[in-house]
Image 1 (cartoon, one colour):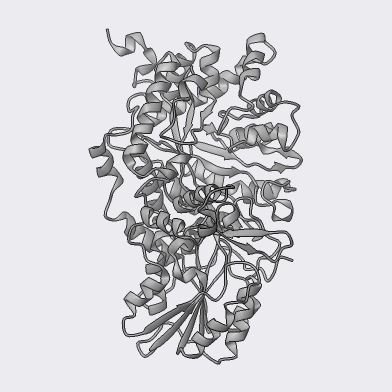
Image 2 (image 1 turned 180 degrees about the vertical axis):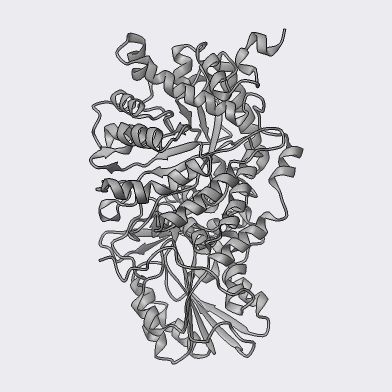
Length: 628
């Protein structure tokens, strides 16, 4: 007897929707609830709790903690182990969707790491962005990951917002063009039929928040919401075939997006024509009860999200939990709401080819797909094209007659500063920092150093210890810092470095040594900016917003002091927002905006400094003079 006869939903001649209809009719209430839930392991090598917590299978599995994996074999084993357990528990061999971030590359050992979204937007290179998306999708599919939480289609017009660096900037047409290219590249298909579906985020208007505060209320007029903030999503849906959307944490017009039928159903599905999977941001459904307080219990929050048009709750069941299940069983909630969401989940799984290609490929197939000799070249090219020449009085390119070059700034001595928020290194670094700062761990004093910011009561833990450098070299063997690259590429120039200043605060204890080094040099090169990254070790990132968008006093003041020497000073700015500095504007002979350039950062920056590559980047955002 054929599989079609016993399980008619396995007939590949049917559409994904038709197959989902057939399978949905066979599922029990518990099996349906499982399909709208997510498993989030805190350690991919320790997953014995899965079968007990999710005895009826699962809709989605988070692969965030693959950020700590040492080998691809670990991730493959994790995917296969959890997939087997999910299918066994489901009763109908329903596979799980495995998801991972993808803004700047996969969180996988050996994966390619690209510049930040804002940096790639500065290239204005649509074709190159499509190649970036293709690489991310291919590398994640090689590990059985078919849901990629990208592209970021937010429009950002407020540099105080800590997540500006993730976006394509302020212009909806540019963001639309790049977002379509990335979506098309990402939503590729392996030769055997395994397919990626992109999850664009964060729908909608999340960077229009009051005060530039992440997750705060957005008072957005309807026309601005539709014609500016929704435009990149509309383009990705219409032109890119976008199949996934993640709503934003914030409220729009007094309504949390995650519980807004006006936004998730009327606007997104009915007016914009979206017909795919809507998955919550991590914890967003629970936030309706605990943060925004529009729901009197987690179950009320879950029901509100379902009614609005949410299909899956990430990253753990809060609203879509046992209490809501009991409401469906008792008739207190309409099970048709659940059926609608489950149908979307099942249809996505059929579209992805998961019923035919359930498990991550074996090592040979995986490695041949994962590794390409051209991937790193694309990362370098993306970094090159991201760099914007903001000013130059003729000092650049650096000429052979420059015999002594003084390099000043914390960013020059380590490639860690090349990796912005939502890169693999940044996410792994954030976890290492959290572990290193726990009470009683001996590593804390060696690997973390407290910087007092100029905002009262604000401190930053600088991740400049040996453990963080070891993590970088494990992920990126052989990667060069800017100093290393300069010394290799300029062998006839004496290149010297001094710390000078940190990336935040007003510490001027390194100024005298920096001035002494600069006084002996023909040219001075300053690395400027903060640290775009994760958690308390960064000055900018998710949840790390700012009241001051300018260079920190420790950097601003040294520029003024160095200007008295009369030496040509070059600035290279690294951060998740564009440089804004009166001192740089007044005193620097040349200034490069390099954003967060990823693994190709050192090569790309030195290419521009030496004239090997003509700077071609153009600003995707307006530079504000200050936060006012």
